Length: 217
Image (cartoon, rainbow, N blue to C red; front, side, top):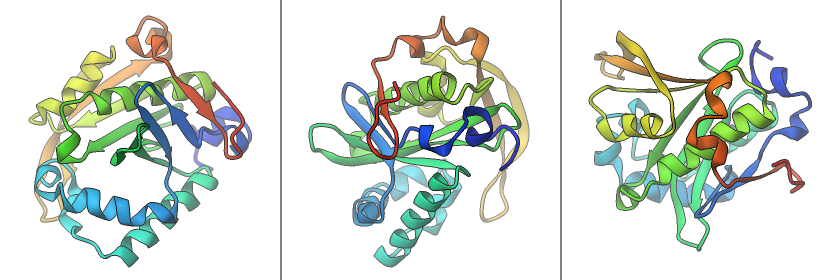
């Protein structure tokens, strides 16, 4: 397990939040049964996602490819390697996007990423889901910091960490690589454990549950 990963920081994998409930959303580990909903959500939003997310260049994918992808997400989750979540509306509106806690920013920290399908943007879903994962990161995983990174031209994405009390640490030039070889700048936002209690995230209404449904938060 890489240093600073969730299992390294938080003890047994059974303590990981497989499902997180907020006021309007369910944020949970993907299952292969989500493959068709994921395929449809991404296919309907490919033009919206492509300017900002390199993986969107590989779309559209077939249902079988999405089944394999969701199996990959679940496998990595169970092994404590990476934590990719589906975002669903609690009122039965279905899958509206994706998020995750990714151990790719160094020991003691994790990065939150997110995307929202085009017909559900402008509702604050990315902010609500990210706020919930910040609570998971600091209260369950006992991390030292959380990062959010984005292209500085992606104003909507940058608004999320700004609302949640993250501090813009700087701009890293040409650090994002696109499939066709283009390099883009990366804006880095960070929230430290020491600053968490004063952030809006600490007051977020969140319930978190483990793999068998036991409440963690």
